[in-house]
Length: 86
Image 1 (cartoon, one colour):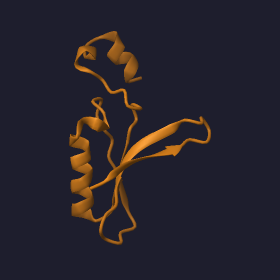
Image 2 (cartoon, one colour):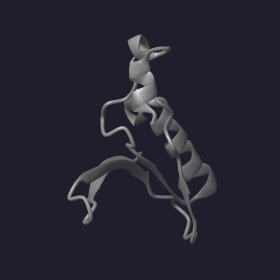
Image 3 (cartoon, rainbow, N blue to C red):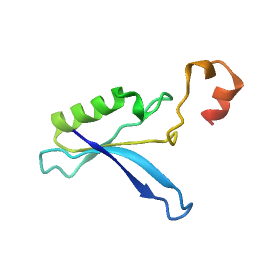
Image 4 (cartoon, one colour):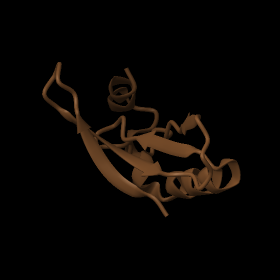
């Protein structure tokens, strides 16, 4: 239902990618979904965003806070994982 887009951070010059779904009702509210360390591209987060937008009728946004580089299974329990989540 939603789509990926990006917005430029003028302070850093970097783009922030996000998934957004517009609700069907004229609601002056929004929900921000924060993905876990597995990232927004797992599909589960997209489904959650779609479901919330449909149920609440408002805009739902899920930013890609890991910039397309989420944790992988081999990172868990290692110093590399600790560095990623700082």
